[in-house]
Image: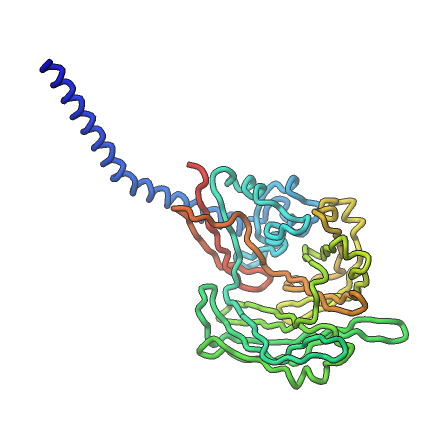
Length: 390
């Protein structure tokens, strides 16, 4: 009996020793494991962002080529295919195809994960943030008596970094773009014009103002159909931009610009009375000012070569090809006749939305960023990476 008790006691002591040792090892090794894991994720994030921003993908022109979809894209990269001396020059068309899920040119997150070898291993979120953000607030408006359209005359501007720090001494240039419908013996045509180019610097609080009252008042008449404020900023080699469209345009059409193509989506119920009368002249907002061009309907051609673009979702899509596209543009504007009235529609060509998955509340998330150039303007590419399997 005594021997049995001694054996049991010895066994319990050994179990206690092993348990204590195992617990101690966990406490000792867990910080080491977390450190190794953190460094692994950080290294993977840095390598991934460097690769994606420096590689064009395969085919290299996959951003602007509508015939390439998620099954024919063989390599993923965001760099522009045409190389120059600009470091980390990113292609806006490729960003749009990865971020805008509302049109048939969209390349889904699963394809991105497969092409970058992240699928089932890592989750990711990539976004592009302006290096300097210019916020615009109207301070003076005027309403027309003919059709109750509201036009803006003066603005306050605030310049901040992506970390919400106000920036002084930013060189700011502001333009007002106007669109008028002109009637003559040959019919209606649209005329675009720039008025009131002004320059100023942000003050010590990062604030500035523009007043276009004297320039706008003579131009507000029954032929004026749209107004856009364009602001560009320059600060120690970095360029940034912001635009604001006066509330003179209803949400008539959803437009996406890919390469030289404008993709318009129309709700099926809007087709009988919808915006079927498009003026063929388009305006392009460039890094220097504006340029004009024309477009033609190529929907049937695109439907034959890339039917997924036209037949996407529950909307009806039309595709228009612009005759000439300036190399660095950040918006396209065109005039639409909708329910008897003319409206200026603006299609932005700037990074909008995130690429990838929402950022979770995970224990270890690596974050890396790079300063890049997109169509002449400075942005931060910010990548978050985390493990989804262990």
